[in-house]
Image (cartoon, rainbow, N blue to C red; front, top):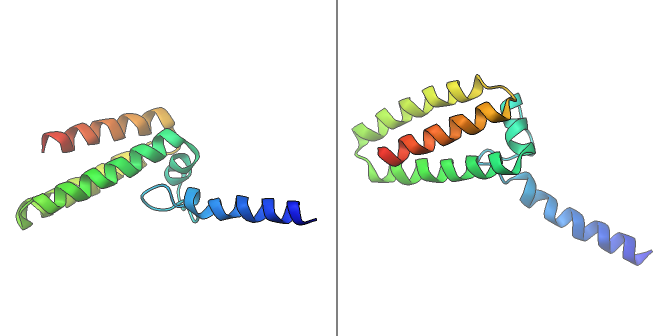
Length: 104
């Protein structure tokens, strides 16, 4: 009896870590895009990496440049969301955005 309970406790201890992996958290997804990102480990990593890249860049920019970047990010999010749950489309959007931020 103790072994099954212990195993259950150990398994559930890791659940919050994996559920929060994406930049937005995967416990309460609202869209097809979020579901696709949470379901695909590569997309999940790409989302985390891009969020970090974006935040790092924001810290380096002047207030004016940061406003411009935020506007671009909103536009990019709309374009990303137009992919729905199409994983290939989402990967392409993330790769394009990361390359764009690298050139910023």
